Image (cartoon, rainbow, N blue to C red; front, side, top):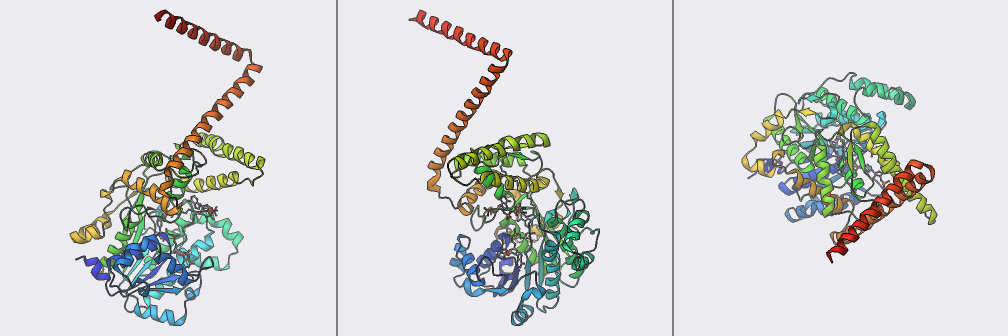
Length: 515
Ligand SMILES: CCCCCCCCCCCCCCCCCCCC(=O)SCCNC(=O)CCNC(=O)[C@H](O)C(C)(C)COP(=O)(O)OP(=O)(O)OC[C@H]1O[C@@H](n2cnc3c(N)ncnc32)[C@H](O)[C@@H]1OP(=O)(O)O
Ligand SMILES: NC(=O)C1=CN([C@@H]2O[C@H](COP(=O)(O)OP(=O)(O)OC[C@H]3O[C@@H](n4cnc5c(N)ncnc54)[C@H](OP(=O)(O)O)[C@@H]3O)[C@@H](O)[C@H]2O)C=CC1
């Protein structure tokens, strides 16, 4: 019997960010392994014209939850959506709901965050720092609370090369930032943002670091653990391999490469590609929840949920695995044949951006205009280039994350728990994982049917022929122009023609002799 699964039985659990990528997998695993848990409260905001109930209904009826419905048929009764916007005071939670949360909650998993790299500082602080502070305040009023698990990121200290499982001091106290944002206007905030974030690449990593500091300072009387995952990718094993539902991290890039938009990337091939499957993060998170509540460590433990030091893979390998998978399972209606490459040089990157990204987009838009359609490719390509520019920081560096706490936690688990809540990335086979990842992107993100693979392969063949035809035509045009303008080009041309003529004559003569 799994001790961790048994621990969550009968518990009232509060999850923020349950509608997000990580939150959904966390909920799924909890219901599947501890179907006798009491209730999961989820803080949800109405969104995109959907009510809370509609959002929950959509999640529970998705493929991700198919297995859950078998083991926990009354899952609908055990999930209690609470209308909440983390950007508001008291999260805009009604008095009755708040009362219930405060009196019943046993465990909190705080997953909600803005993960956008380009969020204005004010918004990122509001969600990643102030909301965390408010949740800690709520937690301190919960008499039955056994553990508070805060999800951070391994990149919260990405300004360092070697990162230990400790909280690093922030140059400016989070409280001071929160206070000053109250009276500074947006223009000034934008102006001081680069100075505040310093050597971090964006407001996301900066505010996640501030969030950790707030947890450290204001959660002293609580039983807290912090999980720091690196780049979270599709599921490795559970509930099935390859599940993914958003474009963050590598998923968007896999689509861009598979559809033939992304042809070149400024990345350091040998830098560590620190991907971590989302189910691995969830297993570690649940194990940490159990350990924190049962063993009550004296200080806040931080767990690095990374792959680099236990089972490293680099971007070159990952890129090759991705491309190799496209051969077997190509995406439908590709713009060009998938054939991306890495470059480390800024100039050559700019060259490839112009030649391989922008030029084909401009030519295609010209064709769309000619055929009376609305041009869209150049806009899309510029958007892709902007996204890539924001990811570049992470694909041109390697970090070393120590994993002593994570390894300690692994050793504390019973053999059964090591199996059910496996977070040992040494067992991960990267090729197999990437193949399933690409397949998952095709099935669950692009919603493409496997039956369409032969047609997609045919389309790629057609694109290859167009590519050859286009290159030959381009060569001939350039050559024709050169011959018209340069005596030397004409001489070379005459030499090649006469050489070919002589070669063919010799070949014809020798084959006649044989007869
Ligand atoms: C040689 C072979 C190559 C083969 C590929 C190999 C894979 C290489 C992968 C390399 C990836 C490296 C990833 C590193 C990530 C480091 C992560 C650090 C860990 C964390 O803790 S952060 C969590 C992850 N967070 C993110 O990834 C957020 C990134 N996204 C953003 O910040 C914003 O979305 C962005 C990029 C600033 C764009 O903003 P904006 O222009 O306002 O656009 P929208 O968000 O509204 O979206 C517009 C449009 O683009 C689509 N979209 C969104 N995100 C992505 C994405 N990451 N990739 C591709 N497309 C994306 C979005 O769906 C919209 O589409 P529409 O059709 O709806 O318009
Ligand atoms: N994905 C990754 O690569 C990594 C993620 N992490 C961390 O993991 C955690 C989860 O990330 P992930 O699941 O990928 O992110 P998602 O963007 O998928 O999910 C974010 C969640 O936060 C919720 N949320 C955002 N704003 C509000 C708000 N104002 N009120 C209520 N809820 C809100 C979202 O709700 P809604 O659906 O309504 O938008 C959503 O449920 C984050 O803390 C992130 O920093 C760490 C490392 C890497």
